Amino acid sequence: MRCIIVDDEPLALELLEDNIKLVDRLQLVASCRSAAQAIQIMQDQPVDLVFCDIKMPAINGLQFVKGLQQRPMIIFITAYEEFALDGFELDVIDYLLKPVPLERFLKACNKALNLFDLQKQRSFEPINHHKNHFFVYADYNLIKLSYNDITYIEGLKDYVKLHRNGQSKPILSRVTIKALVDQLPADQFFRTHKSYIVNLAYVQSIRNGRIKLEGAEVPYGENYKEVIGRMTGRAL
Image 1 (tube, helix red, strand yellow):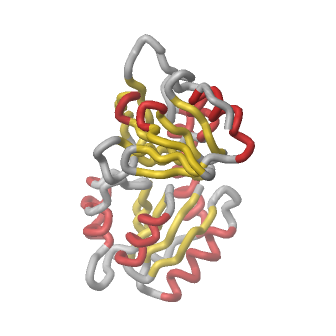
Image 2: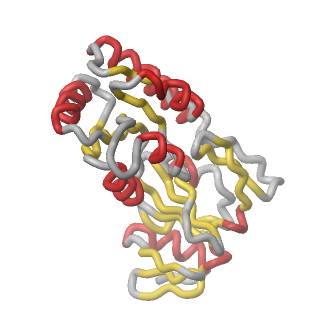
Image 3: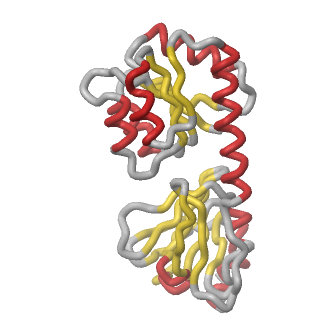
């Protein structure tokens, strides 16, 4: 599970980094000294869990979490008790008071990991091919998507980005690209690269290892030329 730390105190960052190393299933992506830095990290790559201080300069922890459009799991770690109610109203995983005993820290991590596993199990609903839509689990919700709205899908290890027609921001869901392609209609969606699935309805042209779609361009892999042939009816 990918996590980041957000705390303006260097010693607090170091302690959390050491504690996270003790949890085998946690991968520390970044240690951030400000909410602004954390926001930049989260725009560039998926994050499952945030360990966050509350009292920080500029943007405090509560403001930071409230402003997230796609919210990962949050564990607040702070020296102040008075924000506990505010924290739990944001549906955080846990609220830890500094100094945090290791046993208490590990308990909070286990809560997050258990929820993470549950989300993974629910991440994709089996598809009835008589329907024209499907559901993915994202941002703590099952989101209904029309097949025809998806232009292409981008794989990021255990995540996918679902790019939609007319929408600048993709939907990020924890599901592998392999699991997803096995569920989508085979006559409409084609895996043309180890990291990409394209919707044939949006394909405009194919040239020099690139597939031009409406509003985007993606690569196709050398090992997927047979798929391109099935998709177009012509061999490359």
